[in-house]
Length: 66
Image 1 (cartoon, rainbow, N blue to C red):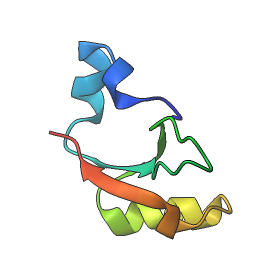
Image 2 (tube, rainbow, N blue to C red; image 1 turned 90 degrees about the vertical axis):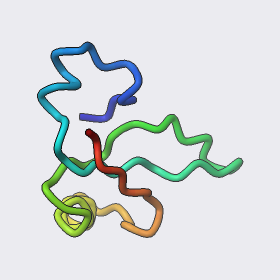
Image 3 (cartoon, helix red, strand yellow; image 1 turned 120 degrees about the vertical axis):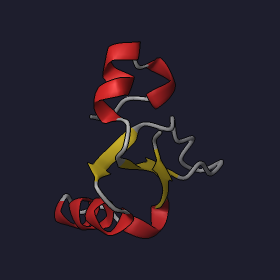
């Protein structure tokens, strides 16, 4: 997905609501843009997707979208 959830249209927001998303944690070193890196029905599902794509789950925060 790799988009900032604040930029979603209302239709896109409705489609993804009720899911967990992983957003990269901001640090001065990485200047993260808060883009969604994984979507799942639980934080563990997001972590699994991140590991499968070679990313460290510790570098992300997990948020439930209502």
